[in-house]
Amino acid sequence: MPQPSRASGVEFLWAKWRLQALLVLGRQQRALELLDDLLGRWPTERYLLASRGNLRAQRGDLRGAVADLRALVARHPDEASAWFNLGFVLEQQGELTEAEAAFRRATALNAQLDRAWYGLALVLIRQQRLREALEPLQRNTALQPMSPYGWYQLARVHVDLNEPEEAEKILRRLEGFEPKVAAQLRRETGLQGTTSS
Image (cartoon, rainbow, N blue to C red; front, side, top):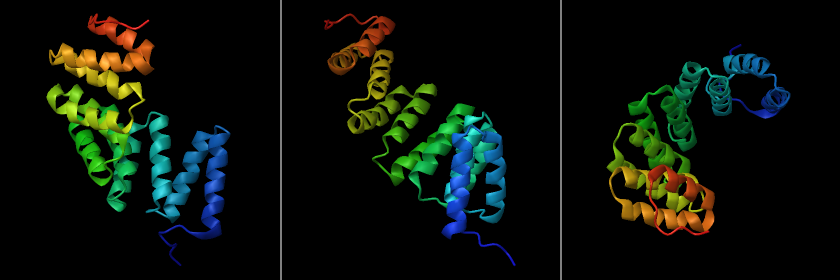
């Protein structure tokens, strides 16, 4: 009798518990073996595909992670976080065009996914498309105003675009809640301005 392709019920909950226990115990290889077995039974299960993709990425198997994440978005095309994860791993592999497409799909599905805006900006920066990187960075900083990462990148882009006044505005903002990051950015960019102490 063929196994159902969709996981449900007590059997699946038990399998998830076993998987999580293996991961907590640091038994990643055994967890991968269990995931292979479970995906043989439930090949379209979102949780299993995402788990194996993430675990493979953590272990440095980017090619395997991309394969799992591609399968995940093929079977669950409306899941923004899956597209973000695919974009993240593709960017790590240097597949910038495909990473950009994945991040754009993630932001189209969920405009509140700040990590996807940030990932998109980083991909555009790596491609030297600095002017295009401004909008995703602005979206990221609007969604995460107290995180220094987006602000840091936004200031760097303005410096690289020879817009020191815009970078200075961001530096003053950063000095208000992340003075160490602002000081580092001032050292890296050479912008002096009026620093807070």
